[in-house]
Length: 173
Image (cartoon, rainbow, N blue to C red):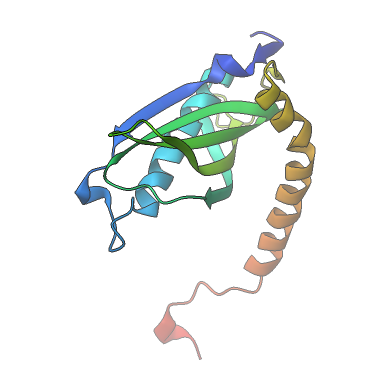
């Protein structure tokens, strides 16, 4: 395994039509459909980087910035932006393109984190990331802030989970 890899070595692109069956009652792309696309490309980027099976550790954010409509195509670009010992942060940029006039816009962004696993499903080290473009460098430089927020949110989720019940509604007093 290489000690380092560039962001572009994990780059994945998926482009799709937006069909009427993919839209919600507002005639825009259903958010769940887009989230499925995001998870798909992000996991492929993580696997390409690690060349190992991965598991999703978190979906840190999905920000819907502009609506995506049936006259658009949707293009998702993903790549690894930062690595820890066995974890990887993956950025997904969603570009909507009006197919009739060619106008393109950033429709959404997302950050997810993954952990590489060996055959025993134990975390294993991954190569460090080397950013090259201005966009990659900006995402790499800002990753530590997202990492701290991710750690804090995970701890808060664990604390909240300690107060939640697994009883069925009719079993609760």
